[in-house]
Amino acid sequence: MNGENILIDTNIALYLLSGDTVVAEILDSKNVYVSFITELELLGFIGITLEEHQRIENFLKDCIIVDLNESIKQATVKLKQSKRIKLPDAIIGATSIYMNIPLISADAIFETIDEIQFIRYEKQTG
Image 1 (cartoon, rainbow, N blue to C red):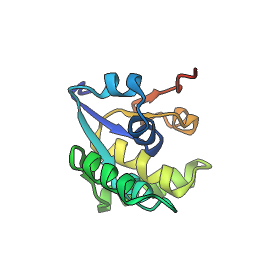
Image 2: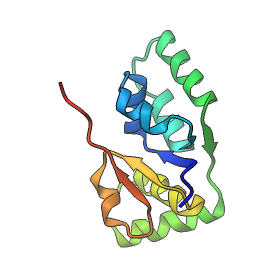
Image 3: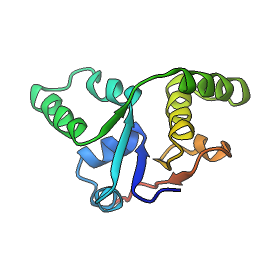
Image 4: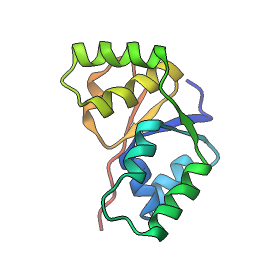
């Protein structure tokens, strides 16, 4: 496991964009990767303001976006066949497997996938 690289799920990006300092500390000095799915989910939110859109664009410029390729497609199909998992989550999980880097998410579904180096994040309340 390379401690310098990490793939973040969409929920982690949202936490970071909303000012979660714990997430910011975890990601500090790491190469942050996002799936193209996360990019689309962030930019595709209904009703985001122009200012929010610009903040997301600026955030994404600091990330390394991983596009779909044949290996990720094949890993996605395997995950969909073996787990009850939504397509976007399967693509993000397959991206983690393909990149061989840890995935951080608040989504417990990834705990069921042995091939993923999974870091479960529980949002701090209060």
